[in-house]
Image (cartoon, rainbow over the protein chains, first blue to last red):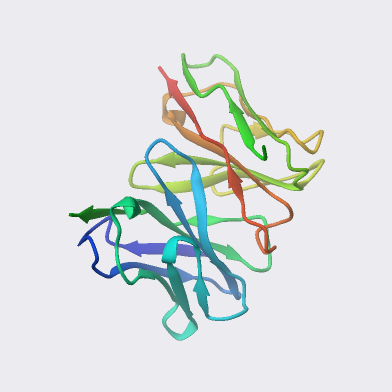
Length: 114
Length: 115
């Protein structure tokens, strides 16, 4: 069965510092992987997705993630945090054999300190 | 404007009283899906639909029903709501399934409280 684990329910960084949000997945088949962001009182917005093309995926707002099959990881990074990055972030996996199912991690709340 | 519209946005109701949360998209998307969001649990998929008249269970379908009689609408039905269905619900749609290059669009959410 597929699953997603996000390490750390809360991450706090200073403005300008590196952002690293961790995501590990389990999947018996090559997965599609996603990162979503949720701002307060809003729905989710796709940041980036991996669908078996380049392992380094660039997304919106300066975020990127690297698919590492050997580590079953898909960590999200941004070189320099901005105050507007404060939000909740969700990693999700879709088993590539069934493009309808989506399994989310528990979410990581990013706090950005001035 | 391309959007996914959910109604109602907020609802407080009582145990056992049937309710329907509507979801409509204006992007001619084939794929639609329902999720519930609970603190500490992230989002969990309830049902999804790959196209008209095609629906399938997600991870937490118990206590819910859906139908997809036309492309634009995907209502979520709670036949006999219970307090454990108190949650924030999101509907989403995308052009094809999740493997396509098109992103999934989310509605603004429906907050249900079952007393």
